[in-house]
Image 1 (spheres, rainbow, N blue to C red):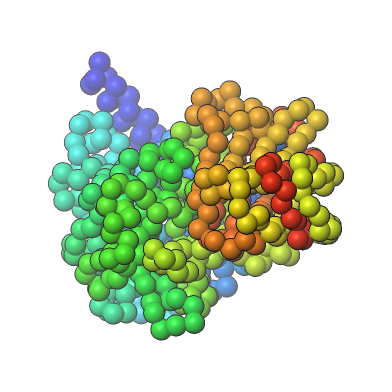
Image 2: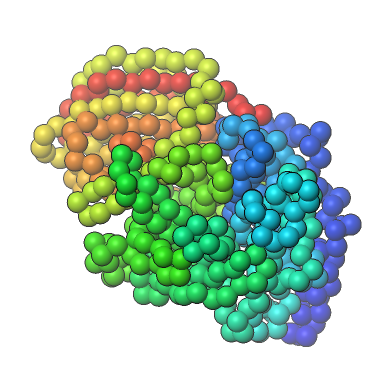
Length: 529
């Protein structure tokens, strides 16, 4: 039986990795889908069809932001992984391009990264134009099914036509599996000026590994980090490493993002991070973080249920105080069974990451990119008021942005938040409770959740880090999702939901002690498609 299964898997693998079979479903840029299906995001990137998960190969080159992503073009559930591809000039509007990388006889094309090889250290460049280099995990399903542990290694591909076509390096794998490393994957590569070499950080089951190279082809192992540090409820995946300057100072810290599945703050997938120093060989976490993560606790980039596998753009035209990031807007607990059919999954909004300081050390804040403001179609101002019970804000469009500021009571227990409703008696709540000093998201009554017992099992929460009595809420509501940026992005929550008809009514509610509404603005948002 096992031999028969292995034989069938081998035949399926060779068929799926045959470009002539897969290319039949490649996206034709001139044949855009309508993007009007039920639950289809209107201002978040989603694939034109079929399955998508992790964003990959994020790189800016020649005026274009490249977004590659894990993609299976033949089904709306996970399968042999390809790299889908889209580009944007503004991080808001996206043009779908044909599939960039196909699986082959070596394996599937798992997650990875891309860089501009400005100095042509790889030798792949032509003329005066630097090549784009993609580094990805080669996942061999046949060796995996045969019981070996060395079924993942790292390969590269290069492009000399602005990322439109890619050639896999004949010398792959450039980082072979050391021999017994399970979950040896997700390379995130960058040029390190301090050590004058390429650095790649890899996820290796319960830790990360750093490797160095002069040319992206020859690599040596530098160090390992992370065993027993931070959250370890599941496998470590999709790491990222980058320097970030603290605004208004000469201080630069190194940020190490490590995604984990399961083990997230509200169950399932999640994105944790660490802050410290990197000397070109080793990462050292800041001392004041050590006690906070020594007992298996994580520091989370986003506390919502639906942010995972987020990584940052290489070469993005930003000052050193900001770093451009995007994530996958789903959760492995239910990603393959959510009630969409033509496509599955979307990306979060692109965000800029910045450092801020707390009594416990440096932390990351997230800010939606300013270019999103071009989607504002019209605005509605809400007068200042005292919220005592419920304040009806009337009809809302299916896609909108909300900015509001509240003055919180000095003491006592209270909660304040937003209530979205539709004519089918479904509702979604998001807000803040003083009792435990936490934000909350409640999608238990927000529509269809029969597909998974884990989708709407209770409240999802996030800590409030600010002590300011002025509470700022900035939220984006798409057809079937919300992204909350509270207190200037110091607490973030991303959640999806599936109402049977769009939410079209909004209320502000307060329980316990009345809360003062200082100001609020609702913006109707254009579709990007």
